[in-house]
Image (tube, rainbow, N blue to C red; front, top):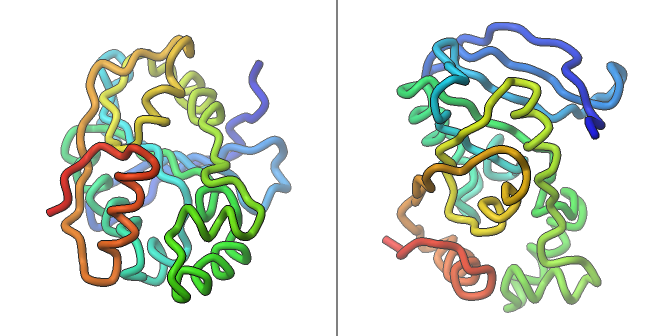
Length: 198
């Protein structure tokens, strides 16, 4: 059952190329809709290079070095522009805990907890994200097959029995920095992310 719908769209020229930015939400008054950045040469008849990116204000907007999110987003835009793909930008800040709790978790990480244990200490889920919205968005764009840009096995699993086939996983690995190496090691060890740290 479709819970969200396309509310508005417009062409957005970016440093990586021209993308159609589509806003999806329950109603047009939503100030924080989910977004799809669809390259102008997008062709849904082919397996579409697709990135599902959860919002990370600190990394995406402010360039925080605590994570690799902003760099992953930029690399995904570069790759999808090259191949006529798309990026789904889901409003699921901090693996679904929101920016306020994310900042609280950062403070706990500064005291020695890892990203998983910090969430647990706050009484929150380790990863509260949902990907059914991504499935709805792709179906609205008539996408049936994707090449998924991800290191996260949960995203691959989300497409099982969805009607959308993941024909390939495309790794999206950013070299670790001193500031985020522990974070990336925790994601690999505790959450099963699929990469070797560079």
